[in-house]
Image 1 (spheres, rainbow, N blue to C red):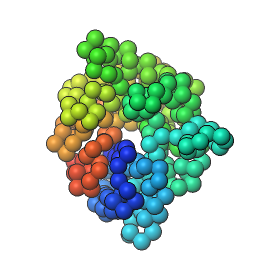
Image 2: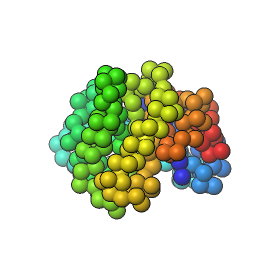
Image 3: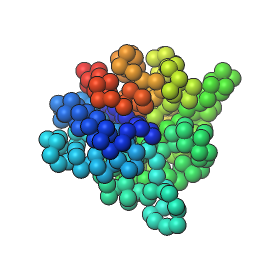
Image 4: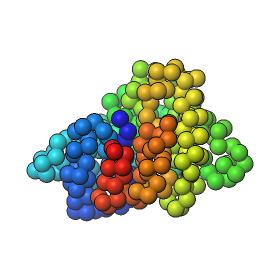
Length: 259
């Protein structure tokens, strides 16, 4: 089943976030209940509990219509980590997924591959599904280092993750040069890297794990390009930024994918 995941980043307050989430749940219900698409949204930490309550109470939506992700987490269960959020806290407010290794965490907040791996293993151990982001910078693509960078990040993120545990893992390929820039990798460029990731998963695990692992594309995904992207053999959905901030544009992505 393809996944359309919306990363709201540092946007929306409680009121606007709840309204968007409820509208998405109403609009996506027929598709998610028919198992045509999985819908995940990742609000800010302060909005997750409010949105979780809204989706599971009076809005007429079932819990499974929209799944909730956090945008990051700490690996530890608890402790002296001022300003951070633990896996169990995320479970407590209704999260099923967590985005890890997003390029903004890597490049703005300087999270290392080792740290991201620590978080991936902790998420799995706690029953959260990590959406693991990997992708190259513009200078790396121009220097023909896309393959080296993507494979290095993939291997590093999955150290210590077993074949059995891979059933919980989602991979998101996000070419950093296409995030929020308006540039999008062509469907052919995206497919080429997705196929590379798929082949590496065969090498790391086996054909079964590789075939079952969902690989999402992220990087200026919009209603106008989702159809071509999702038609590619190895693209199993999208991790969406700006186009997930309004219900109309996000539902257009969900609808195009489900159909």
